[in-house]
Image (cartoon, rainbow, N blue to C red):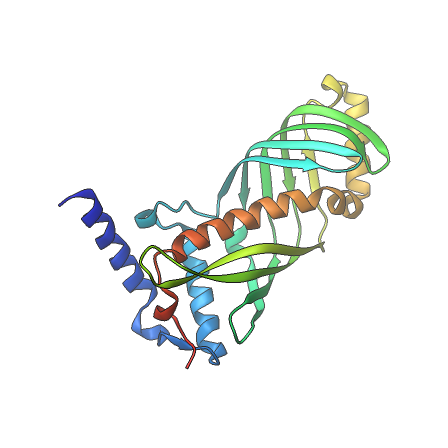
Length: 241
């Protein structure tokens, strides 16, 4: 069996699994319960990864680089691993009747982000600089996800959906712990002062640095979702009449 046929069979077997009879697909465009079940089922498969389509898991999620280019603070995270997405609860799912946008809330009880960092500038009001290992552990986090759904014609001459134009609203609700090693070239007194400030002002610090991290994480998920949707024609899961 050649590689192309093997790939198509693996895609067919996977798609048959997603489009199983218990989902009652395709969903009518007005059948919100059916659409919601399809979104939740698909999200679960994306979080665990889809080897048949060479889609890596989203928990743990590996990101090669996160670039935080803020007005008074510049930071980069390298070889970053985020864990905890599987525990996030999806709610308030909204899909416009013409399937042009998707919105939902995530309530995440605990997330961990760790890797390597470079940082220079002001952390709210304190000067900060350093590079080395880092870890951020959050308490409860609320995230509102909103993106456009674009319909396009694929190489199979069928219509597909793709997510784009991502918008996020992120709200840290539980205390956040920070650990950045080797700040100020290892000067312990300066490093301890910054970390104490960060922990005493965890909400303000988190709101300062959070957006590039969350955008990188959710964008990575949407890229994987779009890769999956290239294999599933729109007509297989949504009908408009």
